[in-house]
Image 1 (tube, rainbow, N blue to C red):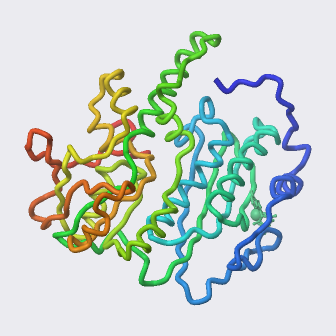
Image 2: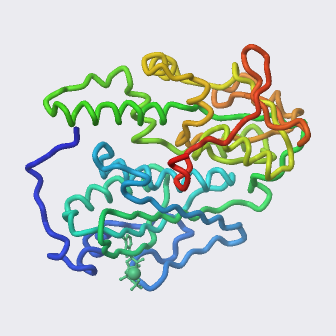
Image 3: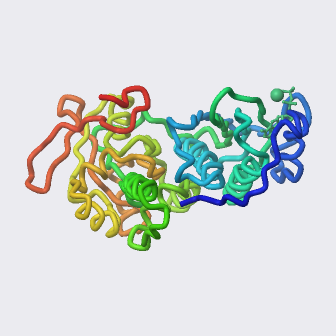
Length: 350
Ligand code: ADP
Ligand code: MG
């Protein structure tokens, strides 16, 4: 699908490490008052005055976390920023800076890294973060990309995984499951493409799902929405591994159980259609799919009126005492213990 045989190829060795750093970072400027010094010295210098600083990092490895056969490099760069920004948002903090570290084999021409950086720079612009540094090195095989995100927050706004109480409501933003099925569609098309490169797939019915997979967005908007509602979440996490696994994290960290109502889980109509086509259970996908980058959080029951009818939020259940367990209440009104079957890079073969 992403075949362009006529690309210009400038070998990395033509630039060398410093030439490459200079080339990739030539047009990176900083804009935030908290960035005193960005790229170009031994370290970046940041100033957050009396705010707290939140730091999060992620490592992405070719063949493990992404497949360049259907993930264009520009999308990879964008997504790598988004997943880190999402972690900062999940602390109810505001993302401010990122650093970008890459290791690449000489299989990649300079033009490929330009594409990667186009995605990274675009995401930095969209999310209003400064790129303030990084590291560049070579790898024996494939590409490794690590992004560190930094954010700021008032101490009282920061929201942890721990902090929920047994009567709190459980809420998720947006919808879940779409990114996973987007990946299934792309995997299927990749196989079709390998058999018949001339096949032109009609991906229109899957556009939302594919976009959720290739170009996910972090919910940077939620912090301001909660602020405007004068709503302080009691615990929060982002949905990266799957709704089920994230609910279990909130429960374990808060020392609680939870009841999740199957009929309340928000899913997009395209997800319903594609699950029928693939003959996969929608709830299984919504619970275990992952990579949604929505926010999952709890609020006090007394705050329910503040979010009632708000299209950004769906109440999907409530917390319980730990002894009640962590359960899915099905449409048939039976209780099934939730399992964390989300994406786990270390137990792929389970
Ligand atoms: P050092 O030898 O101190 O590690 P480098 O020569 O690696 O410095 O980097 C020079 C400057 O360029 C530093 O500010 C560093 O943060 C930045 N930098 C290096 N690689 C990247 C990259 N891939 N993306 C963004 N900034 C980078
Ligand atoms: Mg370095």
